[in-house]
Length: 195
Image (tube, rainbow, N blue to C red):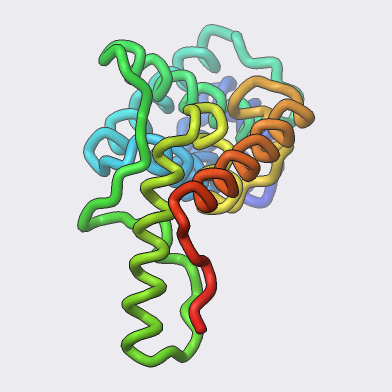
């Protein structure tokens, strides 16, 4: 029987040998990051749940068929599968995802607020709303990197692996996203400081 304090590759090997609990350990270990990654792209809990489940069905099938050879990169491999399923879903709708705020999610919920008076809070909320709208105007690949980096707390290496591009491409997309956001902020005369 495999122990819980082992590497992902060791758990994968145990699962391939028939130990179902090894996969459960992998899911528990990485569930939050995988689910968050999916949710940040789709902005819908039910859809994220479905894609999360589909991701692990695909993982199980690939592992059982012997199509796993990622050599220590289980999480990146699973995130790439999830990313591809999200892309497939949006391709099937003939559109790409947009950042939408709803009752369950706001991309700025995690930003710390300083001690402000009510006026400052109202102004800051308006600035956040305007920036969210501007992020929606970015090209999909730039918007995706901004969301993964700043709201998913992913490294550029992780982003590159998930989106199946080089780190330099991820960095370039972020650079262009920031350039475009600055231009949009200037064009829309948005003031980002609260006095």
